[in-house]
Amino acid sequence: MGRNIRLLVLAGASLAAFAQAGELNEAVVTVARTHQTTLATIHGREAHVIYVGQFNDCEAVSVRTSGHDQHFRICDSKVIDRNTVAPKWPAGPDNKRVLAAVVQNAILYGQASQSDNDGYQIRAQTLGTVGASCKNLDVLISFDGDLVDHALKKVCE
Image (cartoon, rainbow, N blue to C red; front, side, top):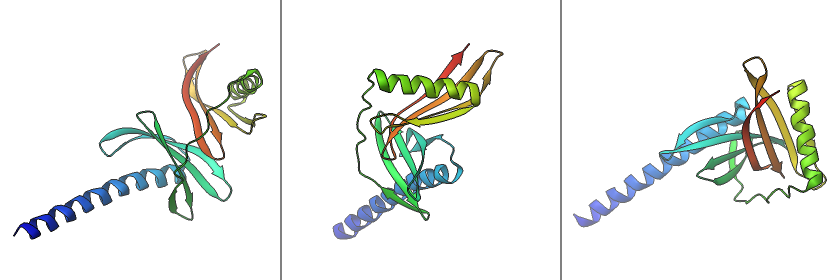
């Protein structure tokens, strides 16, 4: 009897883990397919599922929960967990100049991207206007296809 209960508990735990992994994979695949960052509930927690962009022949997506990032590649509909930690953006004067230029170009033209001298990709795009003189701006910094930083800003002229 005790053995059967243990087997049922193990089977239940395995099914729960599988369901949670399925939740995560489904959110990651959806964002890779739509190229739209979204807010989702994964494992009962709020998670930002962020489209990072195309890297090599794969889509790059990161999941941010409670300050922790998980990086994924989606290649031919297969989700690959990268198990990596993205390096911190240096934020030196040259890096900040590139960031400012990308943000300004996104405000003027709707979107912009550029790599800085350290190999970080900086991308920004407007998400719509708020009132007559304000825009919502999505700013993303990545390195080697992994999310380094992501922010949504309201920019008013």
